Image (tube, rainbow, N blue to C red; front, side, top):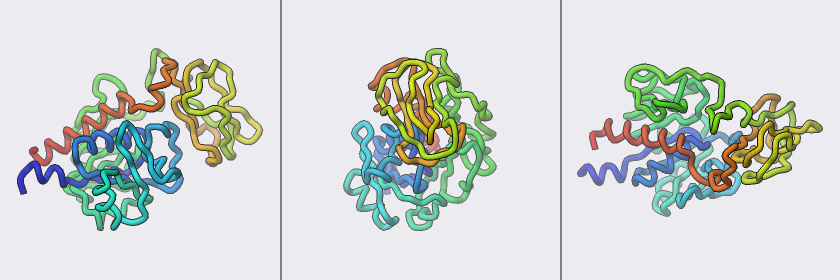
Length: 270
């Protein structure tokens, strides 16, 4: 098998289906790699317009011309690739790797800790962000923290530690994140893409409002009916106010996807 044929048949399993995982999946799929996503049954994803995990609720989800499709078993992976779509499996533990036999596993869960992805699970194992140690529990780490090193490929050591402070957008950091005011079912009264003013109610949790501290456009919001706990990240307001940004992959996700692609090509010397 020549290098070109091998690359087109290189199987990549991405654990996670949220914004960052989807940005990586999109870049790898557009590079003609065979990508499969695994997710939990009820992902708490806020940037739903750019997250392939929405296929769990919609059966299929399209992002910038690439479509993911929920499937029921690993046996449906190859037929879905033949349809020109990314297969998405509900498989929290990633056990389907035993059948799919990926060449690469990317842990894009972004749990800030390793929840069960290790070297030897595939010929190349990549962890995104803090919680992994390249050369120890995974082969490669890709930096996810905004700044000078975003997207850097790390072969020995760790990504920058979790600061617990959201990255700045036009000088705004923590204020752009919307958090659940209490435990209970989530009931949005706004939608992704809506423009809001500071102090406006975006959603309710039981009888308590979740309000925004800043003006901007709602870039992310949990699905209606999701069970939340107090303090959970439930929405995101972009102070730039550009509605189109709600429906396209962020510069951060693209940079991380580029780092993953670099790590794969470097490992297989293609």
